[in-house]
Image (tube, rainbow, N blue to C red; front, side, top):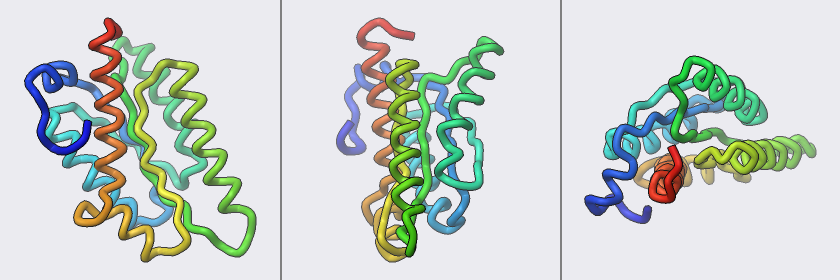
Length: 162
């Protein structure tokens, strides 16, 4: 879904989408910037949004599974999920572990469950890079993740899924 303009068909395919945002709050200011971009994209699409916060990016996949399962049990499932977080390289291997395992977890969930998921966990060298990627006037990675999730919701609906 490149760009803010959507055709009538595409808008109808994401109409009334119920989206879950799971955000890591380890870096609050960066998380706020990612969330602002995601919320703008989801509001433009007129999606309904629930939000869950977790301490760090490594907790995002588990929180998604917990929330998606709870929503299905209540017969009010999510159409898609947006994962938002930031991992900044430090002096140890922790960066590699968190960045690789959070991405692996998201991919496994999305594929195994057929869940439209936008990955907005940014991995960077420093805070300057993080803000350049997170801010809406920058690369808007939060908005990109939301638009990716919506594109997959539209694809699933177009192909006859829920």
